[in-house]
Amino acid sequence: MLHHGTTRGKSRRSRLAGMVLSAGLVVSVSGCGLLSGEDEAAESQGGDGSVEKSAITVAHLPSIDVAPLYHAESQGYFDDEGLDVTIEQAASGQAATQKMLGGDADFVQSSYVPFMSAHAKGTADIKIVADAVSAAPDTFVLVAEKDGPVTKPEDLEGKKIAVSATGTIADTMVMSYMKANGLSLENVEFVQMSFPDIAAGVANGDVAAGTLIEPFITMGAETHGVTTVADISTGPTEDFPLAGYGALAETVEQNPKTVAAFQRAMEKATDEMQDREIVEPVIQETAGIDADIASLVNLPNFHSTLDASRLQRVPDLMVEFGLLDEKLDVDEMIARPDTT
Image (tube, rainbow, N blue to C red; front, side, top):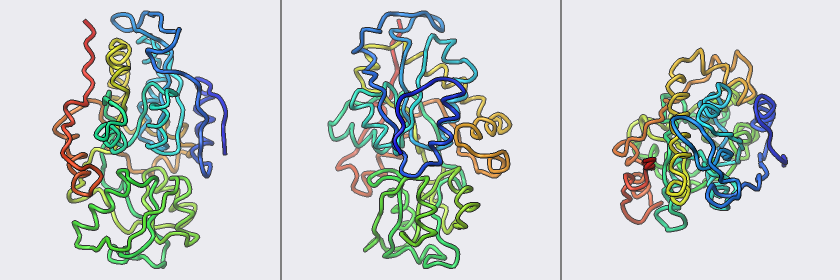
């Protein structure tokens, strides 16, 4: 399903709700260029100073991880900082990152793997501007059909496993889990499938198992009867950094006040996400779920502050499983805009 254009406010959140539930989700580009490349770059007042550009586009993958982003919008925290934010959804972290590389998004929320892979390979000089979430218990799991070919972790060997995208945190965490539990990765086939489609693919027998995050874990159990066979955010990947917000280094360097304003708004919103009573109404709108489902989902650990030592776990795991050829220093990727 292809959706054209973007809107703002509650109408956009309602449209997003339907998009999250759509199979084969693809969102059209907005045509917005990089922050530094448009004629709109006139300064506007916001926060404790001016921003280089007020109108920015943020793209993200489908998950409840972006609850703080929508909370910041609905509560006017971006407005307070002089930012007019358009939010778009992409099918995966890779797709969101491609929107940034193609000049169609200023900031993107993605799993960290595409960011670090692109940076290490020289595809793009990417800076991490805000953290998003780390894995909490039962928030990143492998599901299978009840009474199907996979009923326990040992059954994963040699099977087809659906992941939101290959070469990302999804298949990397599966590999880490299997290795940590002494399971063979030989003949395991990773099949790319969007999060909204994975539970159905498992239930239909297209794949033997699949990785899911919330709210798709709870929705998959309710709609398709899939069941969790392994929590892959355990052992080496316990509390593992999953996703954050990135931008091109050029964007950060040329628009430090805009970046700092975004960081302040996200930090304020994320701090409030520690209260589940605030989170649940937000994810009802952004994920298109009812109050009952929202009350059942397991929430990730929401973060906004960037901790280099914690984020270093991601490229280290990537090196272990061949996604990076050599060690990457995450500290050099963290955006610390100079607004003086």
